Image (tube, rainbow, N blue to C red; front, side):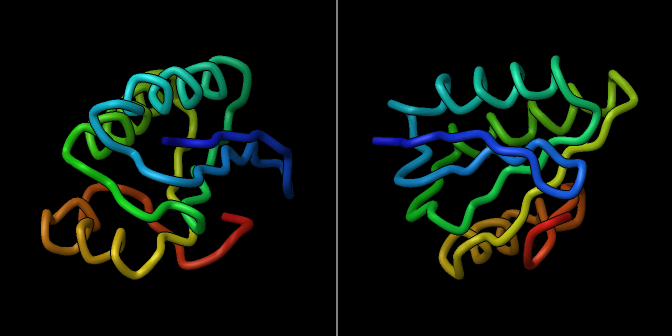
Length: 105
């Protein structure tokens, strides 16, 4: 299960993600990030409440980064939990995604 909320912080639209980003919730995550990107030039995904990310969840984040790049916007990932950061590190995605330790980005 995933819980998503949106707020504005320091000029960034911050989508807070809680729970699990897996095959059951990845489409919902991707839709929320796309909506935020359609309405804002700078979007950050706050992953401080994300317990688990699967390949489907990673795909949603990669799609958001691609969408931001295509629009000339910015997309950042902030505050990943240690277990989620480990997935980014093991997959090599930390080299291609804009990942920060804390908000605001």
